[in-house]
Length: 183
Image 1 (cartoon, rainbow, N blue to C red):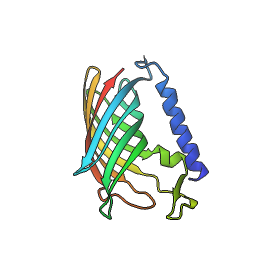
Image 2: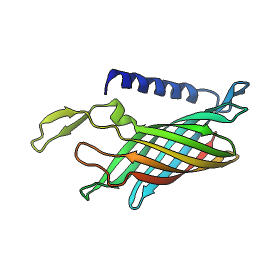
Image 3: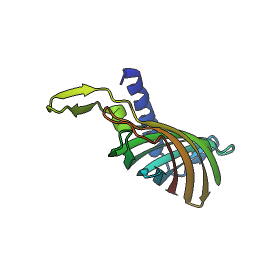
Protein backbone atom coordinates (compact mmCIF):
# COMPACT_ATOMS: atom_id res chain seq x y z
CA UNK A 1 0.00 0.00 0.00
CA UNK A 2 1.41 3.39 -0.86
CA UNK A 3 2.07 6.12 1.70
CA UNK A 4 -0.92 8.24 0.64
CA UNK A 5 -3.34 5.34 1.29
CA UNK A 6 -1.75 4.72 4.71
CA UNK A 7 -2.10 8.39 5.63
CA UNK A 8 -5.75 8.38 4.52
CA UNK A 9 -6.40 5.27 6.59
CA UNK A 10 -4.77 6.83 9.65
CA UNK A 11 -6.89 9.99 9.25
CA UNK A 12 -10.07 7.87 9.02
CA UNK A 13 -9.12 5.86 12.11
CA UNK A 14 -8.21 9.05 13.97
CA UNK A 15 -11.58 10.61 13.15
CA UNK A 16 -13.33 7.47 14.32
CA UNK A 17 -11.42 7.33 17.59
CA UNK A 18 -12.07 11.02 18.29
CA UNK A 19 -15.79 10.65 17.67
CA UNK A 20 -15.98 7.42 19.69
CA UNK A 21 -14.45 9.19 22.69
CA UNK A 22 -17.03 11.97 22.59
CA UNK A 23 -20.09 11.95 24.84
CA UNK A 24 -22.53 9.32 23.49
CA UNK A 25 -25.44 11.74 23.22
CA UNK A 26 -23.72 15.09 22.77
CA UNK A 27 -25.96 17.77 21.26
CA UNK A 28 -25.30 21.33 20.26
CA UNK A 29 -26.37 23.80 17.62
CA UNK A 30 -23.97 22.31 15.06
CA UNK A 31 -24.90 18.62 15.46
CA UNK A 32 -25.16 15.52 17.57
CA UNK A 33 -23.40 12.20 17.93
CA UNK A 34 -24.33 8.76 19.17
CA UNK A 35 -22.51 5.46 19.47
CA UNK A 36 -24.00 2.02 19.00
CA UNK A 37 -23.08 -1.66 19.25
CA UNK A 38 -23.83 -3.62 16.08
CA UNK A 39 -24.53 -7.20 15.01
CA UNK A 40 -24.66 -7.74 11.25
CA UNK A 41 -25.34 -10.75 9.03
CA UNK A 42 -25.22 -10.74 5.25
CA UNK A 43 -25.41 -13.54 2.71
CA UNK A 44 -25.67 -14.66 -0.88
CA UNK A 45 -26.93 -18.24 -1.00
CA UNK A 46 -24.61 -20.31 1.23
CA UNK A 47 -21.99 -17.53 1.37
CA UNK A 48 -22.17 -15.35 4.48
CA UNK A 49 -20.40 -12.81 6.66
CA UNK A 50 -21.45 -12.27 10.31
CA UNK A 51 -19.86 -9.57 12.45
CA UNK A 52 -20.05 -7.54 15.65
CA UNK A 53 -18.81 -3.99 15.93
CA UNK A 54 -19.22 -0.42 17.03
CA UNK A 55 -20.19 2.73 15.09
CA UNK A 56 -20.41 6.42 15.83
CA UNK A 57 -22.93 8.65 14.05
CA UNK A 58 -22.23 12.37 13.61
CA UNK A 59 -25.21 14.28 12.21
CA UNK A 60 -26.66 17.73 11.86
CA UNK A 61 -29.42 18.14 14.47
CA UNK A 62 -31.71 20.08 12.16
CA UNK A 63 -31.33 18.42 8.76
CA UNK A 64 -30.60 14.88 10.11
CA UNK A 65 -27.93 14.38 7.43
CA UNK A 66 -24.73 12.86 8.71
CA UNK A 67 -21.86 10.43 8.54
CA UNK A 68 -21.36 7.23 10.48
CA UNK A 69 -17.93 5.67 11.02
CA UNK A 70 -17.65 2.10 12.21
CA UNK A 71 -15.48 -0.95 12.66
CA UNK A 72 -16.37 -4.61 13.05
CA UNK A 73 -14.85 -8.04 13.48
CA UNK A 74 -16.49 -10.84 11.56
CA UNK A 75 -16.36 -14.40 10.35
CA UNK A 76 -17.02 -15.29 6.71
CA UNK A 77 -17.49 -18.38 4.56
CA UNK A 78 -17.60 -18.01 0.78
CA UNK A 79 -17.33 -20.35 -2.19
CA UNK A 80 -14.38 -19.48 -4.42
CA UNK A 81 -14.49 -19.45 -8.20
CA UNK A 82 -12.72 -22.84 -8.20
CA UNK A 83 -15.49 -24.33 -6.01
CA UNK A 84 -13.72 -24.53 -2.64
CA UNK A 85 -15.19 -23.26 0.61
CA UNK A 86 -12.99 -20.46 1.97
CA UNK A 87 -13.39 -19.16 5.51
CA UNK A 88 -11.67 -16.13 6.97
CA UNK A 89 -11.83 -13.50 9.69
CA UNK A 90 -12.48 -9.93 8.59
CA UNK A 91 -11.68 -6.76 10.52
CA UNK A 92 -13.51 -4.07 8.56
CA UNK A 93 -13.81 -0.31 8.69
CA UNK A 94 -16.77 1.44 7.09
CA UNK A 95 -18.44 4.76 6.49
CA UNK A 96 -22.11 5.54 5.89
CA UNK A 97 -23.42 8.85 4.58
CA UNK A 98 -27.10 9.70 4.51
CA UNK A 99 -30.26 10.81 6.27
CA UNK A 100 -30.47 9.45 9.84
CA UNK A 101 -33.73 9.77 11.80
CA UNK A 102 -36.48 7.31 12.80
CA UNK A 103 -36.26 6.21 9.18
CA UNK A 104 -32.74 6.26 7.71
CA UNK A 105 -31.47 6.06 4.13
CA UNK A 106 -27.74 5.75 3.45
CA UNK A 107 -24.95 4.79 1.08
CA UNK A 108 -21.90 3.06 2.47
CA UNK A 109 -18.38 1.89 1.72
CA UNK A 110 -16.02 -0.29 3.68
CA UNK A 111 -12.76 -2.19 3.46
CA UNK A 112 -10.74 -4.88 5.23
CA UNK A 113 -8.53 -3.06 7.74
CA UNK A 114 -6.19 -6.03 8.20
CA UNK A 115 -5.34 -6.13 4.50
CA UNK A 116 -5.04 -2.34 4.39
CA UNK A 117 -2.68 -2.03 7.36
CA UNK A 118 -0.53 -5.15 7.28
CA UNK A 119 1.45 -6.69 4.48
CA UNK A 120 0.34 -10.27 4.07
CA UNK A 121 2.95 -13.02 4.28
CA UNK A 122 2.23 -16.29 2.48
CA UNK A 123 4.15 -19.48 1.98
CA UNK A 124 4.53 -21.45 -1.21
CA UNK A 125 4.65 -25.26 -1.41
CA UNK A 126 8.31 -25.25 -0.35
CA UNK A 127 7.63 -23.04 2.71
CA UNK A 128 9.78 -20.20 1.38
CA UNK A 129 8.68 -16.79 2.60
CA UNK A 130 7.71 -14.13 0.13
CA UNK A 131 5.82 -10.89 0.38
CA UNK A 132 3.14 -9.67 -1.98
CA UNK A 133 0.58 -6.93 -2.07
CA UNK A 134 -2.87 -8.43 -1.78
CA UNK A 135 -5.85 -6.54 -3.20
CA UNK A 136 -7.75 -4.99 -0.33
CA UNK A 137 -11.22 -6.50 0.11
CA UNK A 138 -13.82 -3.74 -0.06
CA UNK A 139 -17.51 -3.06 -0.62
CA UNK A 140 -20.00 -0.38 -1.59
CA UNK A 141 -23.69 -0.49 -0.81
CA UNK A 142 -26.90 1.21 0.19
CA UNK A 143 -29.57 0.59 2.77
CA UNK A 144 -32.51 1.74 4.84
CA UNK A 145 -33.13 1.56 8.56
CA UNK A 146 -35.81 1.97 11.21
CA UNK A 147 -35.11 2.99 14.78
CA UNK A 148 -37.27 2.92 17.90
CA UNK A 149 -35.73 4.22 21.11
CA UNK A 150 -32.25 2.72 21.54
CA UNK A 151 -32.87 -0.06 18.97
CA UNK A 152 -32.26 0.10 15.24
CA UNK A 153 -32.58 -2.39 12.39
CA UNK A 154 -31.04 -1.77 8.96
CA UNK A 155 -31.45 -3.69 5.71
CA UNK A 156 -28.73 -3.33 3.08
CA UNK A 157 -27.30 -4.57 -0.22
CA UNK A 158 -23.52 -4.60 -0.78
CA UNK A 159 -21.33 -5.25 -3.80
CA UNK A 160 -18.22 -6.92 -2.35
CA UNK A 161 -14.77 -7.59 -3.78
CA UNK A 162 -13.47 -10.64 -1.87
CA UNK A 163 -10.25 -12.28 -2.97
CA UNK A 164 -6.75 -13.30 -2.01
CA UNK A 165 -3.65 -14.17 -3.95
CA UNK A 166 -4.93 -17.73 -4.39
CA UNK A 167 -8.69 -17.44 -4.79
CA UNK A 168 -11.59 -15.11 -5.57
CA UNK A 169 -15.14 -15.33 -4.23
CA UNK A 170 -17.80 -16.55 -6.64
CA UNK A 171 -20.47 -14.19 -5.24
CA UNK A 172 -20.17 -10.41 -5.26
CA UNK A 173 -23.62 -9.13 -4.27
CA UNK A 174 -24.68 -9.71 -0.65
CA UNK A 175 -27.82 -8.62 1.19
CA UNK A 176 -28.20 -8.46 4.91
CA UNK A 177 -29.62 -7.12 8.10
CA UNK A 178 -27.98 -5.22 10.94
CA UNK A 179 -29.26 -4.93 14.51
CA UNK A 180 -27.89 -2.29 16.84
CA UNK A 181 -28.27 -0.82 20.30
CA UNK A 182 -27.56 2.87 20.87
CA UNK A 183 -25.87 4.02 24.07
